Length: 315
Image 1 (cartoon, rainbow, N blue to C red):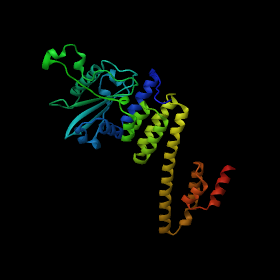
Image 2: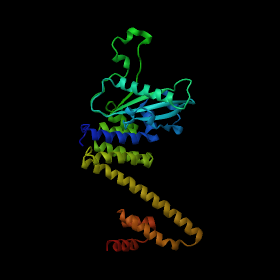
Image 3: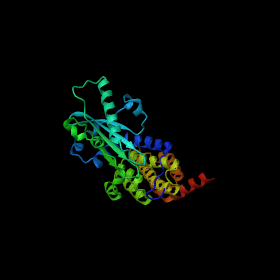
Image 4: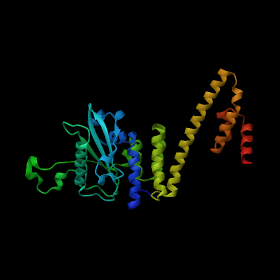
């Protein structure tokens, strides 16, 4: 995929995006980063992200159950429950009546809540977020009042409802790079695709983010590659970064393992008895393609021993 290009959104590709985004934003780290980085309201700082709950939306109407990308969280704000709904819009151009669609979604949500076993004196607040990943500028009104002719004539009885818009293509690549978290990296790859920029962002992310979160991003881009949304050359560049991440994780685990082996060996007086384990680990590291000198340094085995293991494996 070249810089700034996107495939047309066929039904199959749309489903890939739906499932991919649903999985990403069902992760609490992605959810928290989306709000903290892209929803500029003071009350966001007071949300109890540690206790937030991803909601099973099967209680919503069948029409909305089919939307794979919609995510609903229940979270506490100042001790009260609120709901945050994330609706992902993948169409290449904006829907003029999106405000009506989202209002319909919210009213369905409220009706289902009222019919549930939970008792309410008042209905809880719902904050709707629409994330748009298309290429065209988002021109649709976010306030339904602007879609109703002469709505203002009704004064206080006129209809008012507004959703919060996050249009990925309205956020500059400079700002996304400055934010430098998992969600900003996702947006960078979606609407400002430049494999060098994305590789740099992913490399930086590996130094500061949970491994599982970074792995989810790589898996998402890999799915785009498998479905021909991402070019082979571009994916190979990203795969190098992922391989470096996996190698770093492998080396760290090996170092921890041998630190433990040495400690136990000193306590028990039988460090030599761990030789068999060292040989097995050395074999695994060679399979990973590690340099002989590096394997020797980590395992404590001699270079000649490592060479012998390597030769035996090749024969």
